[in-house]
Image (cartoon, rainbow, N blue to C red; front, side, top):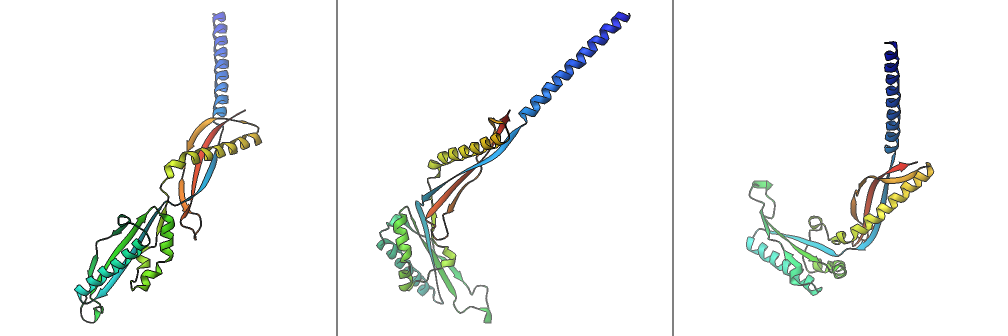
Length: 233
């Protein structure tokens, strides 16, 4: 009976020792697998805009509806002629439907504005010929000189866009990822470790901004990636 107790005690001791060894190995693996570094990498490229959308908004007012409509039509022709004389084709110029406002509808007595009708529309240039559009923009004072008052606040000025982002994005992502790995390798070197596999990766944000306030036709494209790398001893 005593020998059986001794054998059982020995087996229990061996079991506990084995469990402790496996647990220790598991904790060591856990600590190794849990070591990682998070780094960011970025890449930038300067490109020229390849699309211009230029809305030219105008409004005329008066008390005679026929006269107001005639003035709006005349102004619209003036704007179209300005754009076509600059070399743009008819399919690059779009005229919005006119908007008519009767300002006396809900105003009475002394509250009535002096002009009853306001008639407005927008002539929009949409073109890929950015250089020609810039030239026309510099001469836009000619429209005002011909008696057309443009609503600069409502139109908001021309917008310059870059439409080929998908063509250059893979290269930028590759450059940003390479920059992230370089940062991770430097961190690992400084901490006495080595870079392992990728734990996770996130492309992050792709932004298109004006290079500066004075050059909206020149764009700066920036890609930022976030990558987590495992660290090895």
